[in-house]
Image 1 (cartoon, rainbow over the protein chains, first blue to last red):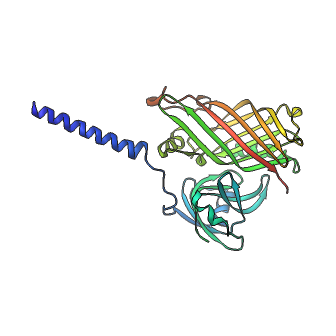
Image 2: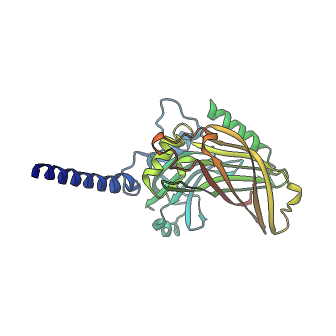
Image 3: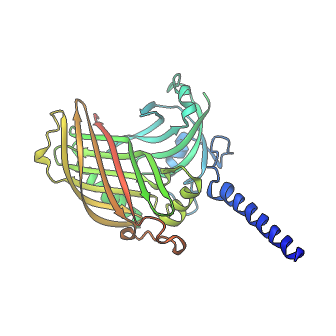
Length: 145
Length: 184
C-alpha cells in the first residue's frame, strides 16, 4: 500500500513538473530574441535588395525567416503610429520608392534622430520576405551608426 | 508558377493606376482576431502595401504573412507553419474596386461609406469578396478602414483535428490604411 502511495506521489509530481514545463517553455515560450541573435546572414543593403529583386534561383540562399545583418546608407525614416521604419531606397516603381524597409524595436527609435544618407549604418532584423516592391525586416536594431 | 501569376495579376492591376490620382501607403495596418472556445488569437501587421486610385476606384493591398506578430511565439509558429504555410504562400493580397465611387468625393473632407468588390488571395486560394468599409477623407490623405470576416475553410486553411471546435472557424480581419498621394 505504501509503495502504491509513493508511486502515486511520483506520478503526480512528474505530471505537475511536466505541466509546468509545457506551460512555461512550450505554450508560453518566449519569442526569438532577434536583437541578441547571431545573424544567419551578413550582407550589404544593395546585395540584399538585388538578391530578391533579381529573382531567386533554386541554388540561392532563402533569407525568408532568417536573421539578417546588413550595412547600408539609410534614405529615410518613416513613422507609423509609435513605430519607426528605416528605409533604404534602390528603385522607383508603381508604389513609389522601392528598397528595404526595417521596422525598429521601439527602444531603438531614438537612434534614428541623427541618421543621415551620407553615413552607413549596420542594422539587424528578422527578414519577413519580399512583397514585390520591398524587402521587409521586422524587430530591427541599429547596431552602429 | 502560381506566385509568378499572382505577381503578374497584381502588377497588371496596379498598372491601371494613373500617377496623379494614386494614393499609397507602405505602413498600413492589418490585424486579425478570433475568439474560439480554446483561445483568443490576435495578430498585427504594420507593413502593409496598399494603393487606391481615386478616379477608377481600384483598391489593392498586399501583405507578407511572416510580418504578422502574435503575443505568443507558439501561436506565431503554428500560424506560419501549420495554418497559412507562409514558406509556400508568403503573401496575401486583395485586388478590387470601389463599386459606389460616385458616392465618394475624395476632394471633400468627410467620412464616406464604401462598397468594395474584388478578389482576396490567402494561402494561395483566391475568392471573390464583397465588403463594406469607410474612407475618411482629410486634406491630403485618405484613411481606409474595413472590418470583415473570413472563413478559414474557404481558403483551404485546415484546423488540426485535436483542436477542431476549440479554435474559431472564422476570423475577423481589420484593415486600416492611411493613404497619401503619390507624387512622382
